[in-house]
Image (cartoon, rainbow, N blue to C red; front, side, top):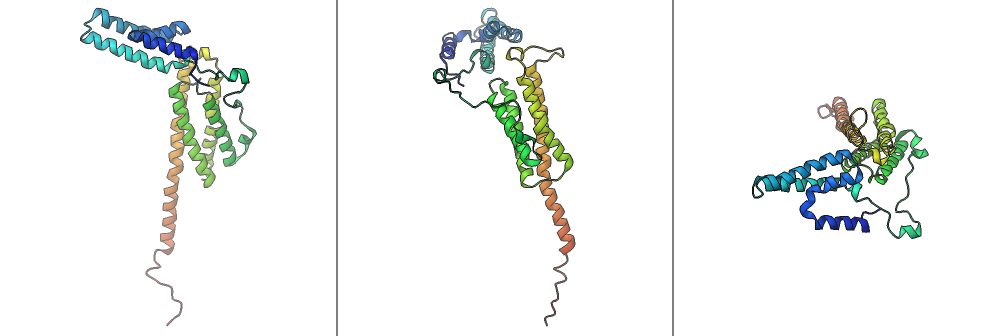
Length: 261
């Protein structure tokens, strides 16, 4: 998949040609894609630019307002690139029939059902591959959170593989994160049609907003598991040290007597 297509090049070229009208780009994207929220946001940038140029002093505050509107519109247009600069298959794949990547199934592999570290590693590897395959559908900020969560859980799973904590509660929380919560959130979002991810639900939130918040909550829990797992290492070392001091701490005062005179 690539954004370097003829259509996208033409669109970017038109943006460069009409760069002074950059403040209207988000409004144009929303109008073409029929996204009410994007249209309202674009109206804000367009209004700021129009007021700055035609109602205020262009040399002073008006110019600053117009430049700020152009900059904000440009940044948001980049964030909305999946709407107007979609990724496509490479042109030669249309003739060869080759896929750019091997499709990851939406169900975990049989290895993920194994107990212990091997099953966790298989489940985490699968959900990471599914997230990477679907990164073009996931909002950029949400994908960054997903990647961070995946890395932290991977570090915890690997630490448990090397030296199991044998803490039933900790293992239960880790299994739930790796096998249920993270895959459940990702698969639930991917099951939503792409044209509905910005549609507000009865609770007043869009699927994109729900995904972002839920991934942030999972990231917080992953950080807590990571911190808890690595705090055990110095605690275990301290416990061992206390035992050794209690058992052998006085040996330097009372040396062994081997009966040698």
